[in-house]
Length: 95
Image 1 (cartoon, rainbow, N blue to C red):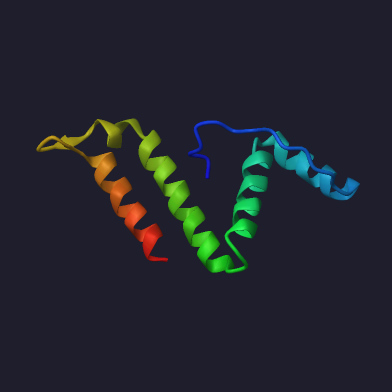
Image 2 (cartoon, helix red, strand yellow):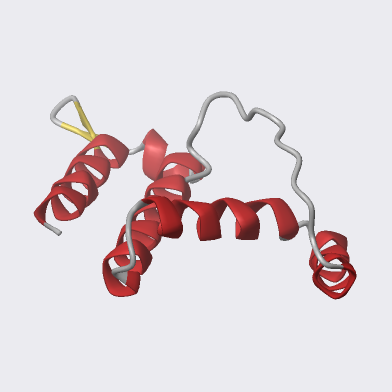
């Protein structure tokens, strides 16, 4: 999810209690990603397992592509981050 090149702001109205809980998450810089993850799950349908699976793959892709060691390793001219990313993308397409 976080692999978007540009994030666009969006406003919404929340009950005060939910807003307070969200502000607590914001202290750990988790609020925006949590809300984006929830919206992604809703937009992908009610299959929470599939939505969670896809989110895990998205998170894994972010880790692989942001890891300097993995992105620096190449064998026979093939970047290992690209190989792992392709494999993870293939998994996402199977679900």
